[in-house]
Picture 1 (cartoon, helix red, strand yellow):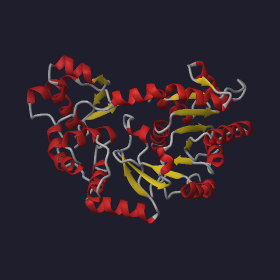
Picture 2 (cartoon, one colour):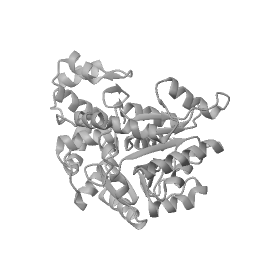
Picture 3 (cartoon, one colour):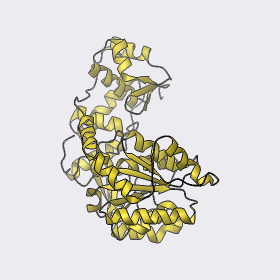
Picture 4 (tube, helix red, strand yellow):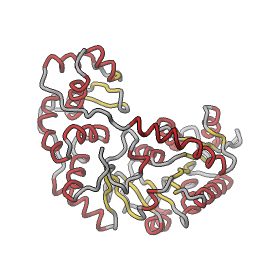
Length: 372
């Protein structure tokens, strides 16, 4: 996707596209690559979803609804930044499933700096908070933006310690919604001196399904992720999993085996995460990983543009016969069907728009019952 600044009309079309039915970040990118613009993709959606088997008209976000959302953002001092624009976090842009648009309130210069994420337990110990503050302060002093999720405990401690030098809070709700309530003053301070980011619309209340998506952004925009205290079922472990999938360095602070808040971090270390004892460990790892990360990003840039499939009934029938409720690798579909790769990708796009296909990452797909 070519780097550029969107005109207002294009930005509106991007927002309409990502807010339309059955459109997620991956299919959004495929549509932009296939049709060159969001406006052309929007025009193609009704026919594509019909070919995929949707028996009613696909629900498109109206221009009025998109304009209202953009106005709501402007009213609270925020704006939408597209993944092709220079103000979008550079590392996040190359992550599979990165949000096409983020709602941003605050300093854009912080997004241009390299970032380190610090996350951990909401029910943090005094020692855990002290370590989070220490790492955040030292890494911010070294020039890194500190990224976290504005949750209670470790997140709060990291934001507070880095606020003077630069911190970004990634939210699971609208940038104008205060959550948790006790962080109202901190959230206002970050909006003024740091930056707030969300992929949800202004006014969106926090919902359980929004937080894993928030965690994906936290790790995706960061060079490294530090976990300070995490129980075995902690959301911080989801952030660590995303970080591993995205090729980021994961650091965990060890703790007492008698403290449930250290069970998750101790397990991460046993599974290969870096044991973190001092900030220099992070600085050394980032210095060592810079060239490989850049090469990895270059390899992930799309080489071929997915195109809408031709209306070939035999090809579509072959793909449908190979699909099942169990996740199937797209490369297996191409090999077993004998259908050209670009035609397969187009058929999958149509099925997804019709609500008949679920993606499990970029490469695995499964079939579901068609929507009415």
